[in-house]
Amino acid sequence: MNLAHSLRGRLLWFLLAAISIAAVAQASIAYRTALSDADQIFDYHMQQMALSLRSSAPLSNTETAANVEADAENNELMVQVWTPDGVRVFRTVSRTTLPQHAVLGFSNIKANNTTYRVFSVQSSTQTLQIAQDMAVRRNMAGNLALRTVGPIAVMMPILMLVVWWVVSGSLQPVSRVRTQVAARQADDLSPVSEADLPDEVLPLVQELNLLFGRVKTAFDAQQHFVADAAHELRTPLQALKLQVLSLERADSPEARGVAVGRLTAGIERATRLVEQLLVLARQEASAAGGVKTQPVELADLAKRALADLAGAAQARGIDLGLTRADPVQVAGQPDALMIMLRNLIDNALKYTPAGGTVDLSVTGEGKGTALVVEDSGPGIPAEERERVFNRFYRIAGSEASGSGLGLAIIKAIAERHGAKLSLGESAKLGGLSVRIDFPAASKADA
Image 1 (tube, rainbow, N blue to C red):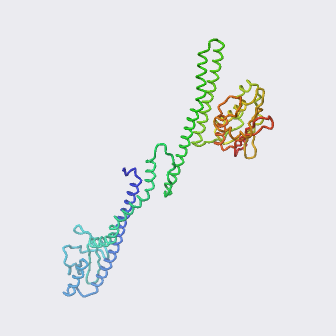
Image 2 (image 1 turned 135 degrees about the horizontal axis):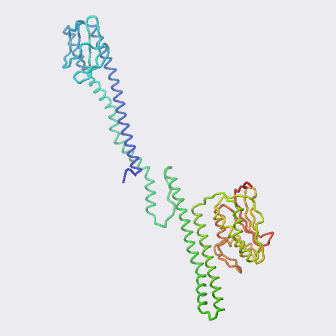
Image 3 (image 1 turned 60 degrees about the horizontal axis):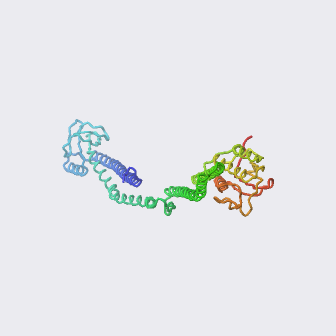
């Protein structure tokens, strides 16, 4: 495992480094604190010793000198005494000789590559100097710091093991999720278990499950498309094959012309079916990926759709018009809404007899927007109005050609936009009335 790219490795290294740095910092603080305490203790002792010697009997006395030697040896001190004339009258046993003229009070003196802490005091009869090697204080501070840090050093391996155990245990759910995903088959898109996941990992797994859901929806749509295409294209392809055979057997120009006309019509029907299947597949795939909406002027889209199909209406003598166009906006996808409008108008034209009427209206009603298409055709019986939204379903006895996908496409697009689709009877024209209610529409500025 590459620790530079491993979350567990990074956490362990960072935590162990933090523990080590904390231990070093604790040792440094303990040493400095102990050194400061040692300085205060020894400075006080040197000061008290100097004041005591200044007021006691002369150090020429053998017994007094012996006591000073013993005390100085116990505390690793050096004592020197001079007369006012500069004659040294006493010095403890030491290989180091300090300068005779010292600064009164405390000072630090370097001699023989060593730093000494010196306390000097002067009286009318003598100058007294007490010195101590600073290494004594550093050694004492080091021993005190070691006693403080020692338990921490002993506990560090245990603490590191605890950190490793906690980090590994905390990341165990991530390993479990990885194992679950790695063990899946390519077609297994079931949700990953969210049990016992920490709060930091749970959102990632939830988003992963949502992604699995969207991919599953897309796969299902693809499978439905393939199944529907295979089922519905079989019949028109067989019909085209028969029409080609009829064309080959035609023995007169008139018969050949009839066969060519039938073949052309069959090709157009098959082409229309394929186009409708592709539109439906695209809409279902887009629905699986979510809808990215934008404000859409619904009345403008309606006018464009009417203009696109005006030629087909004129060819059959159908009065196609826009009876009302309120300046309203809906949140949606312009391309998908245009496909929906064209299918609505195309269905109305297809089932309206020649010379009939098809009206389209866009109205803003309160906080909603309504799109209504009415025609003067035969309409749809009430008991059939739910079934006509199924794919490839066509009302028995219908004379108009079609694939049975128009209303399925319309419903899919309406549902993607949160709109409600309903069928009824047109009170004005007597045929079918298709109404789509969009939520949260807002009136555009005139």
